[in-house]
Image 1 (cartoon, rainbow, N blue to C red):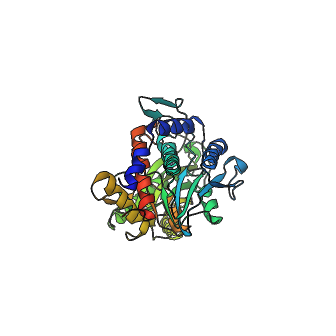
Image 2 (spheres, rainbow, N blue to C red):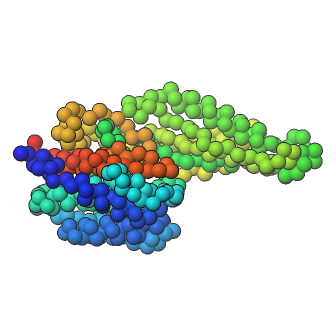
Length: 395
Ligand SMILES: [Zn+2]
């Protein structure tokens, strides 16, 4: 029997379910992840890993409430380190209490992404149980400060800045039936349109006072033209760059002259499009509208993550393919990851190739998140296959 097959057979479904339930039972909204991190630390210390924790992350207002941690399982030689990463914070929305019923785990973070963290833990446990040692170190990392708008990846960046990253990495969320080799970056834009006039009765307002709602309509029209223009440039897997309008507000009473309006949305851009340029392009459009309408327009442009691209020749990409073939009997289709996530930080900030390896959890960020534990079994087997192939333990 092959090594991968032996490892797959040793994956313990009940144990994954229990681990995932325990993790989901510890609330960990972005900014308060200390207790969940402690759980992770305890598990990996018991598995014989060396633990490094970073408290008080630079640029984070949460002090020691949102640490990052790296657990290193030493390899037998100085072969390259493989990192397996996942964020431990969840969005701060309320959720029914954690439950595991009929093998379905539900709770805040079940899909995004504590189920994935439980699969990573199970992979480490299986390797230890079967006493399989790999030539390079395995570096298991987790952190908070991931979920926007509070998090911008500060937790993972802190690890990267301390050199706590691998020569390649797997992020245990994202696509299941696809090998994402690229993804776009995303920024949240907030545009404020202000009049030079004052609020008051419409009849008391001079008729040529710049109207912020009319100016906001002009902003929408100009950005909509830009959106349509962006659609003309298509790239493989990712499609085009986009502008999306999520909200528009202004005014508060039918005959009161409004003084401001607000437009907010997302701007998604290609991996090689510098975020400063993207911002400047939008600023130029807004400056024209401000001049035409006599209003003041300001832009807040909050980069959440840049995009990424990974060469199909990278060892970690080949390892993903090998594992996928071993479990599914066919090649994985190549694709793009639609949202932004931490692969881009690993690629851009750490300068290493990275891939996603997720599960079929459903309802990330929704009122109800859930994942079938059998999907976590599958994810664990994928991760084990990637480890086996990355270190060339079986070809
Ligand atoms: Zn996530």
